[in-house]
Length: 345
Image 1 (spheres, rainbow, N blue to C red):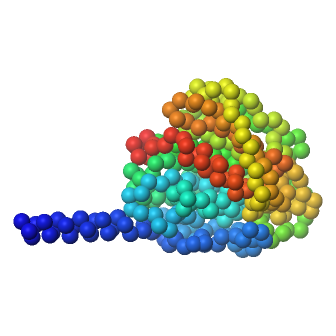
Image 2 (image 1 turned 90 degrees about the horizontal axis):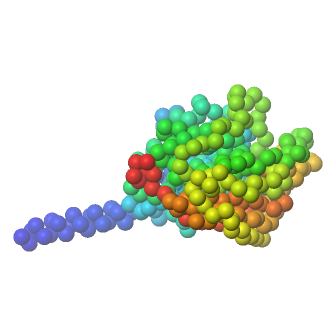
Image 3 (image 1 turned 45 degrees about the vertical axis):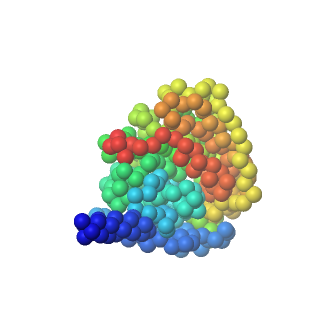
């Protein structure tokens, strides 16, 4: 009996020790600061245009993967797939919506892929699915408490296209559209919205849509009808008017009286479109600078869904998000219902 108790105790200690060891995700050793992290300003062009150093083995394409360096086996996390816009890059997106600064505090695992064509189309779907499947297998289905799609511009349109597909519909709990179309009633483009004439390219970021886009790449898909929480973020100058109602809020029987609050940032975001600043355009986006944002949240939604709009005042399409508004959006995401992956849809 003493021998049996010793063996069982040894097994228990070994199991506890294994669980206490940090979990390293395949091909993505975790370091602080994160790899290829831009400074507060003046990020070098070869850094901001990087597509990542984690290799997706089935396609041999790369992506970024950010997560807490002290992530434990069995720990519950929120997984986010963050898609860049047309003409952009993985590391530009990674700093446009800088989740990499909040992985430790909010226990986030963030995959930021890259399309070599710099625009998403159906030919990329398998690559995106492989990244998600790898994360689920490594982290454990039971440990992903929520899965969000986030996409800027054409990355938002792509999220809208794929979210109710057979693969994603049973996994995605929420969709954050970063100037990528509003689900539940569009906010129209400002009359002066467009890409300014190109002048000299600055070294602090390039986000200009490429020529030769695949057919339909910029065509808004039909509104998705499956269940998910939805946050729409936009610059004030890129839209004509934000609708006061939301069909998605009505779907979840949210209160018609939305709650409004203001977020103030004293620090600028990281990136911008350095190819379109001579002269710049308020609608397309100027250089990063501090600012404020209005958060409009539809309250009392059933099933703990979150439906919200975020308008960044005096900003356009391409100024990177500031730290305070980024953190407030993360908090909104984490407050929503999750568990699709855990429960198999």
